[in-house]
Length: 226
Image 1 (cartoon, rainbow, N blue to C red):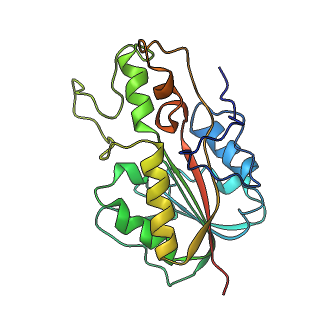
Image 2: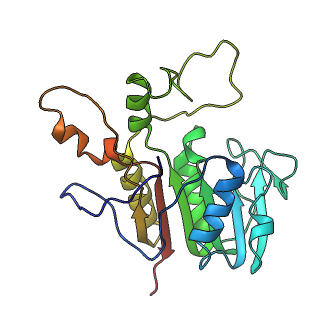
């Protein structure tokens, strides 16, 4: 079922509405790249840095960008291990810095996020998963009980999530560290992916929590103007 945006705002909902339409869906890396290029087209211009770019699928979709992709993948413009190395760019080298579904795989996401903010002259686009919701989905059988990124596979995994958090933690993480670096939140939203979960009597309030009903967090930070 395609994700739908929730129009209600709860008192404890950290979402911030903005101009970028977090709607529609994607199902693999190719469709995700097309989704990003469409939703954030107004920002993906000028000097664009894609950190964790994989094969650099966005490159061919950004006609108005001078694109640089960073990843361990040998097809990236710059092959770099974010676990051990910092971004080798001067402060404010890029107009827009993009890092989607990457930080949760790193041992020190705090350092890397700060580095992303450092090299941006204007915008930073971050996405982080809602791990709490994903775990609930697995427990209730939505993925056959398989704990993707957290389970115990038969063979050693090539990668896995190194942090477990919900939407609210993810929102506080990017907001607070962004503010410390002089950035403000322009948009912070996720698709409402509420499902027909059974959680017993008294569970309705739990279902209303952003940590349960919201999917991947997408955040746009902009460098504050003096």
